[in-house]
Length: 219
Length: 181
Image 1: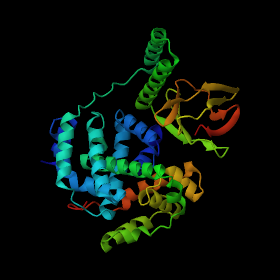
Image 2: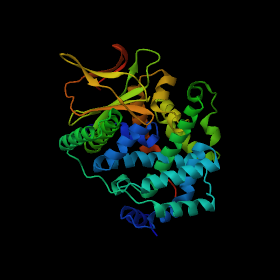
Image 3: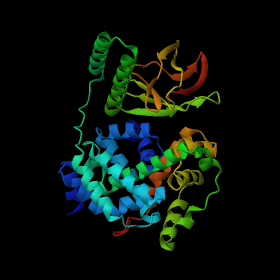
Image 4: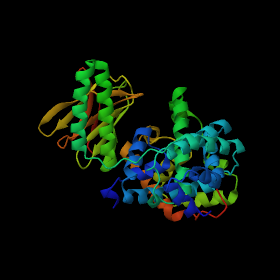
């Protein structure tokens, strides 16, 4: 069962060794996958058993309860997202993007919307399919830290570079050659690139001015 | 109110469910955050923010995942670890923390000799390489990448060791006694 779902990543999530993007991917996936939720629950029980042996029990200050109570009254829970047909959503996002460019005529706003659309598509894909993840191996010392999520079905890619200004592009290596997959766009303190359909890519590389900074093989 | 009733209220998004859950599990959540972060103020912020983040997402908890107590505890722990890493990164000491600082044996941090023995016995059932990776993850809060760099072992191997080690511990750790953390 484990091989058909998220593999080792549920144990890594329970231990807290994933970074925020990876952890977010697990949370979104588990929200829609009962089997992975059960596997994660088993791993989480083991971690809390460790806590029971190692963490001294303390009483929190009373003011924390009042603070949480006050905040909970002003937080409105978000509605859960329904599973998304990525292809249809992608077409819709693309049409919205075209409209946005037509209306605003500014490159900056268009780029913002493209990033948001790309990330929403990525998170939708993460939520409804299974994936593996790999950290890119650096080939030069100053390469930014980066990782890639490899979607299993369909075969999407999501590249996350731990730098808002990586100034690089992502190249996909296939059995017959290579092709440029695009340039990661700034998202908070990272840069991200979602490639919705890349079934033939066996390796990706981050490159700057044609020079390879880092790379990762499909696991 | 039973744990099952608390969980049902949480899933149903009853307005008072978050407060009820906090009241029921406050010592667990606060203790875990305080243990990771080492500061009362940071622990309070961590528990508050983690619970509000969870409460803002209706799909965060599902019963298949296990008890609400375990779910909330792990969420707070992960939030605390994330904050600890962010703080280290901010002060540019992440590498020093991960690679160079002398480390006390974790066993010295466990006051109860019975618990210490239980833990030692459980970890002793693991192969050395799995135990070593798990200790760095659980006791030192290192990320998988940091563990890989510290041990000079490929990241994929570290992931496998962590996952296999934790799965083995599922069978060897004592059941959590009632009334403990």
